[in-house]
Length: 228
View 1 (cartoon, rainbow, N blue to C red):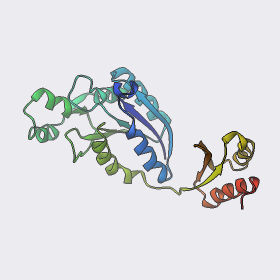
View 2: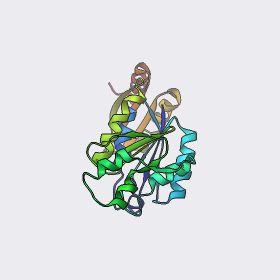
View 3: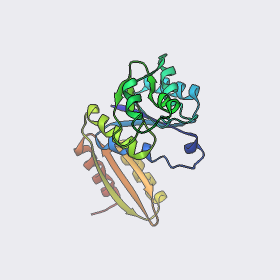
View 4: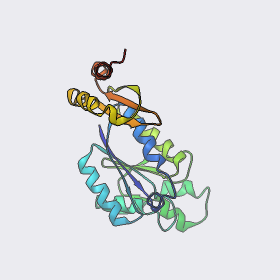
């Protein structure tokens, strides 16, 4: 499956918070053979959330959205997603009743419990705000522990495809192996080959859905580099 990840939050755009949620989901999905087409960060603005979700929904099999499901003024993700699909926000009383066990603030309760009509609720066992699914979009809280709890509940429904990876460490600098690396990239178009310069060496990562092709691509580069 192809995925687009959308992270919502002004704190991400300002650099005050590192986007660990997107990295976590991308790693988990990639290991299961899925493809991440894009990772997008948007501000806490209803219209911008709606636009990005609407576009992503059309361009990928599934969209994963995190952040902005709390009770404060800048938690507007549910409203943005609802607008993307021309849905109304409605108060889910079962959620509101659960929150009342922790809070007596009715304004906050109704805000957290207001979700797009017709959506599927995904329980959040480590926090207050639940996740939800509407169309091909899943929305999760931004707190990492809460995101992981909801995301792991969703993961199985996406299934798993063949995925293999291998790596090679080459001493020296990237520019010295650039031409040889490009040769392998051209010869193995169905293998993803990543080059990651480190201090004094380069890490080459090979990945794809065919184990033999991944191994052949690595071996080919080793041969070109005269590595035994």
